[in-house]
Image (cartoon, rainbow, N blue to C red; front, side):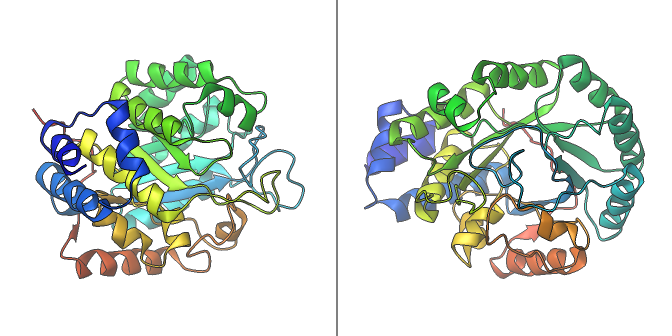
Amino acid sequence: MLKIIEKAEKTHNLSKEEIIEILKIDDYNKELFEAADRVRKAYVGDEVHLRGLIEFSNICKQNCLYCGLRRENKNIERYRLEPDTIIEFAKKAREIGYRTLVLQSGEDDYYNLERMKYIIREIKKLDVAITLSIGEKTIEEYGEYKDAGADRYLLRIETTDKANYEKLDPGMSFDNRIKCIKQLRELGYEVGTGCLIGLPNQTIESLADDIMFFKEIDADMIGVGPFIPNGDTPLKDEKGGTFELALKVMAITRLLLPDSNIPATTAMETLNKQGRIIALQSGANVAMPNVTEGEYRKKYMLYPGKICINDTPAHCRGCITGKITSIGRHVSDHYGSRRKSK
């Protein structure tokens, strides 16, 4: 096992069988996390990139079984922010130091092409990098967003098991998801994806496939987090994912994609009070504090127990900055683009 971890650290390549072996055996987790941290330090350094997250609509036309925003959830109070409110939140986030903003929502058709282009153009004037996380669109729309100033696009695969994907995401096409990710790459975006750990019917083998997929597409950003069952979804009685397995998938991902940007996800901190700090010490180099203001933070309820829903954006920034400095790291003052190693 130590030889496999050493191989990953030195070559950044593993076979599917080797990934499965690491995932199945927990006796060498400490060595795995330490190796991932060394690779993180060697390739992306000690700075941590903060991405300010604006959750601007919890209305979604999709009906994914695991998601609290799903179309058929009648127990959620819906909202959507007007374009000028989104821009105002962005201005305030810029004032407290954010250099990257992530615009995230359910798949809400109210935000047509013209509205999105207006939002992107206005926010781009603030001298920030813009990441969009708004779901599946046409290649023409992706191109227009890019022309308006969007830099990055986050489109999580959640699972690369096609049958399980289409069971968990009824009405959606796995092949179209892959097509969208490839189109984003063709258009010159920094492309982000990711997976949920602990989904129903998920196997260690399919998790290994997820990691191999990240490597295959050379993902620029990879978000890995535990599946946390939501009481307002059909999967409310499922077991969910564990912090330790999510951390292992994240660490292996760092070993295989040494210069990618990997966030310490908030879902990890929902399961472990020190979750983001532990993740930052196990390969992660990004944190995504919420800069949405007021009551909306509580309403964007993907999963229960979400952290920081009663905090202000300024408090969240101060809190995560304190955690980062407490482990000898520092907050980056750059846009935080992926810097590919030679």
